[in-house]
Structure formats: C-alpha cells, structure tokens
Image 1 (cartoon, one colour):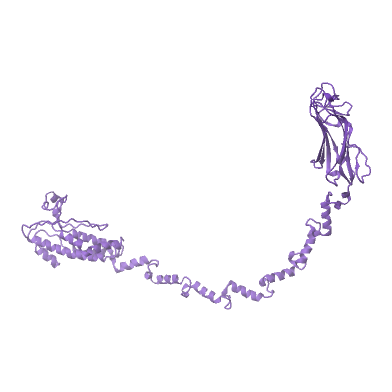
Image 2: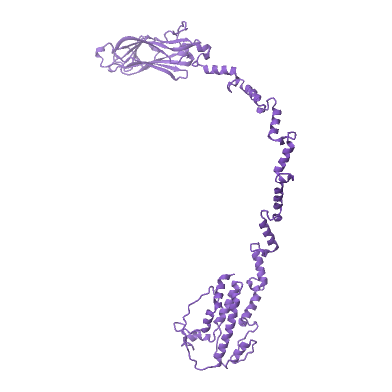
Length: 542
C-alpha cells in the first residue's frame, strides 16, 4: 500500500513516519466483528471501532503488508533496518486470577527481497500474562549499503488463541491503532561511487569498467578488447593474423625456413630439391646415397636370377629348372603327370592307365603262363584221352610222353583269387604214408608236371618281387595263386567225390585227417615268399 511519510535529514540515521495502517479494517485474515463477551468464536474479532483484534480459541493469523520500495522512493539512500511499537494485552479479559493457563501470542515481521525470497524474519513472543503494554524496539540489517530497490515488501502478522477455550473472546488483544512500524535509513555512499566499498551493490560492475578503461586487455568482455588483443598479438608475431602488418613477408620467411622447397627463390632450394629426389628414389642420380643398393635391388626385382644373393633367387632358380624339365624335382608343378608319362613310356605295365597297358599285360601273362589264353604262344589245347599232342616245350613234351594210355580223368582248376592281404595260416601237417598198390606211368607224368609248375612258379615270384606297382604285383599274384592251385588229381576233392569219392578215405574236409601237400609247404617256406608278401605293403595299392 502507498503510505504518506516525511523525510528529515538522513545524514546519519533517519526513520520514516509510521508505516502501519491504524485501521484494523485493512488487515487480512479470517476474523469476525465484536467485543469480548458473547458466544462468538472460535475465530478472532475485529473491534467495531477498528482499533484492533481480540482472539478466541482458534489460533488464526491476521496480517498486513508494507511496500518498502514504495515507502522509500528517494534515490541515494540505504535501508538500515526498522523500529517498532506493539500495543498488546494478554490477561484473559481482565480475569487474570481465573486464567487456567497463559494464552499464546506472537507478532512476526518478514522482510522480503526483490525476488520475493525472505531476507530476514523476526518473531516477537508475548505469550505471558500482562495488561496493556507497548513493546518497542528496533532491528538493524546485517548488510550495509542496501538500497530500497533491493527489497520488495515487509509482511507483518499476528497470531494468538485462548488456551482455556472459553465461549466468547477472552484471548490476547492487539491494539493496531496504538502500534507503529518505521523504516530506518541513511545516505548511501555507494550511490555516487559503487567503488566506495566491496559490499556496495554494483561494485563488481564498477570495478570491471574501471579496469577495462585502464586496459582493454583486462578481460575479453571489455569494450575494445578484440582490437587491443589483435594489436598486441601482431606486435609479438606478425604471423598471428593475415590482417597484421608485415604478415606476407613473415609468412614467406617462415615457409622457406620450414622447407627450402617452398619456393624456387628460397635459399638452399637447389640442394634441397636434389636431396628430395634422392630420398624419393635413390636411383635418381648415381651420386645419391644408397644408389648402389637401390640399383642392386632394382635388378633383383626385375629378375630374381640376376644374382644368387637376390631375395627369391632359390625359388626363381627352382621355377626355371622346373620350366626346363618338369622332372627336375618332385616338387615341380606337373611332376606327377610327367613322372607318370615317363614311367609309362619306359614300361607300359607301370599302371593300368598307361597307353598300351592291355597289350603289354596280355603279353606278360602269356609269358608267365602260356595257358593264360588260347592265343598265347605255347598254349596247350585240351587233348582227349589217348591223343598225342606235339608241343614246343621239351619238358612238357617229355612229361606227356610218360603218360600211359587212358589215365584217370584229372581236372586242372585254375582259380583267379584276389588277396586283399597276405594271410599266413597255421598249417597242421600230418603226413599219411599211403603205400601205392602199383606203379604206373600216370604218376610219373604227374611228377613231371609238378616240376614244370615249380619252375614257372619260381619265375612268377621273382617277377612279382620286381613289379613296379601294386596292380601289376596283384595281377602276377593272381596268376601265381592260380598255378599254386593246380594240383594233379585235385578234382578228386570235389564235393561229389567227397561224399563218396575215391579219396574219401584219405581226406575228410569236414574234420578228418589232412593230407600233406609237400609242394604247398615248399612254396610257403621258400625265401621269396616273404619278399613277395613284403612288397604288397611297401608298394601300396595304385
């Protein structure tokens, strides 16, 4: 609220006129209108003549507000504090002796800053029994040089209650019209000189402006700081900015100093250019450092065969030799194919895939055994009993001549057996001596044929030990087994004859005695048999 007041000289400490509205009607809060007696309450009553308030049982608050910046509008002053006078009575409606307790009553002054926050709060407690009394005093703010604009309002409030809770209004009484509130103020030296004291409002701004005036480089926020800073930096270093005087000359000198190749007019340009070219390529000139090494490396790079010390010389030499002759080393590309072709050209029997293998194999088999095929040279066609056959082999011919007319039919069975692994079986030998009932020429013929087979078998075993591949070895082995299976009179072991044949008494394949075959025992015990068996594993299957 706007209040009228007068100013006296404020050279030292002055106060305003009473700023407290004497009319209680202008106070805010919840209250009624009336006097002490009656059945009113529990809210306080405003006295009908607006002189003040009297409380009942409820502790209601009433209050008023004083605008400091309106009360003190004169420039150049500082608010130091305030003085007060509170006219209060706490006597239970003059019935002091009947008061069962003391009624509570207090007055609060809240000083607010311009932003609405509380600068300082003051509380005055009058919760004791007494008759009408004027309580006076003053307060001084903790801070100096506070202009009225630093504050906004002062809120004054009063609160009380009748502790006995009697019907009516017998609580504390507050005479507003007889109370006062005054602000204390004085001349503010900070007004004309904010640098008067560091506590002056505006001191920091004034000090900042003072320093900027003295030296624009004091702070980057100073007016003229940018221009002053540019002048300072250019004086120290013309290269600071392109706007500096002498920048172009300083920049040229700097670039030539950093790199003589910056410009052809720089001192030392020719020497620097020569060194640069040599560093880029030592082959630039024969006078460059490292020219000899670079030349050597260049030649080696062009051709690793340039010198035996070149990196990759061994690999290049190896590749060269392989290109000349694929059979130079078994690591040469295409070596396996070339070696295969070479072996096939040397011996068509090297592998079944060699050109001419079939023809060579056929000739080989005919050589081993003329009986391999009817077109083989020396092949003996089957001759009916009693028929005389003329053959080229004198040994066979001799054997045939020993034959008597009509010998018991013999079947020579040549079985082709492929053995995956050589198996040596334990043979339990039991020799049965059978006394011949008569000697005839058939047995002599059989003996002769065995001798022929023995010679041929030995020949096959020798060839088998020299076979180049497992396939050839296997083929020879098949022929060899077939020859081993040829035993005169073996047909007597046929199933039909085993059931009741001629030799049933001598051999019982279902568990009877075993007839010793001396020829088989000879072959197993022959030294070449172990050699033949060993080759099967060393050569491997091709």
